Image (cartoon, rainbow over all chains, first blue to last red; front, side, top):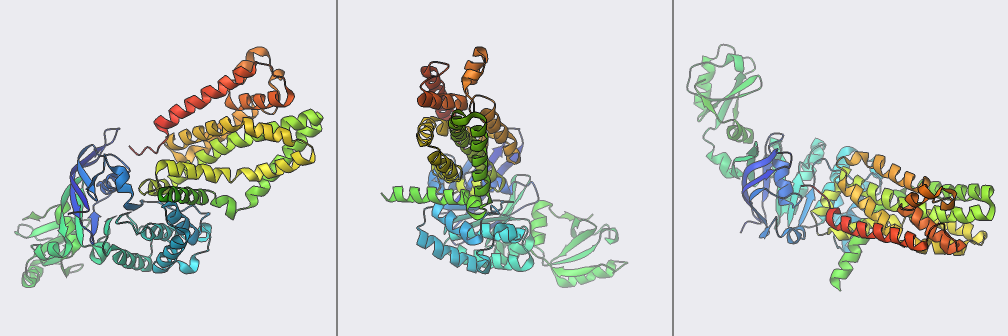
Length: 298
Length: 244
């Protein structure tokens, strides 16, 4: 059974704006589902519905087998959420915040202290445990929020763009902590950073304009992607009239190939080889195919 | 039993998160204590024993009202700004537990004003006035917290919260007869002024202290009962976070 399950989920706000139109997803215990999508795609709305903050307009969503609309109280016993753009009260120190948040969730003081220490150490904030929030950087404050949610030990964890504002090292610490946390638990994680997908995703879901555009087991998606190589070339230099599948991104166009030899052959057709590269396809290409679709013969 | 323990822990956790600014920035205590002492001295200097009694009544009523409207309202607003409120909602911390936790946290602020006021009252033999006013202010505590909850949960842009709670708290504590007796006002204005929960509470306390009132005490009780009933109904209907 999927711990988090949604089918044809939709949400229309009272001002008439659609948050999501048709989103379906499944995530099981032990999995990290990364929800990918451009800004305004509906990632946060999806997470807010699943974490019982907002009510869906249509479709079905169940968490731990409970309906998000009717049985939200049951769901709340099993979940924790790190909201997008959230921050701690600057009067809190990391230890104070995590410890008393856990007590607020019903932990005994000794359990709260033990778990607070464990997760502050895990995310590298133990040495700053007594530093006032005023003296913490934005990224450190975000990490405190993350420690609060991780320390909760909830069976289902919703993380809405948790890596925003973190430096490179901070992101690796975050991914490592979430990996450890996800053993036996279910994590739903939104982002638009492809590196994160490669580092932590077991499954991905791509959403665009409020609609699920694809997804599934991450490794399988990569294996089943029909192309293995891409030539990235300035859009003005693309050879017109051939049958290759292409996707335009900014000033550059990606031209896709099944074999490396085909990609190399393509290079010979180009007049200008400056700013040209051959690369293996990655998650970004899977994402772009889902969002934009490949166009052949342009 | 276990549920009760968990609920009590939950309230304590929320309360201590809420009251952190007070614990970590004791400058607030100095501000509140100084303000209390200053008001009492001012009214004592201007009005002698009568002024002192009115100062104690006014301070208690203003403190209770500000604690509810400003304290609770701004706590909820701040939890919205930091989005901690979303973390509380998407968790086993139920809305009543969160609400009671915030309330408990705000109660922890009260001693910062109450202790100096009690000290002054003790030194000037006004402890009975203080006790009677605190007792008379119990309905006001509920009413003010309810107003704070309604503003805190209801306001769409929480960064503006203090621009709403401060004027409400300030106007209703200083304009109507809270620090001064309602008998000072012309009869037409008097009853309207006494329809506010702050003035009705202060006048009720004055009636209990001085044994005289410019209106029938039943009118004051009816005013407070009406505000209490309205608070119950409105909080039951709107006293929860609205995310849609």
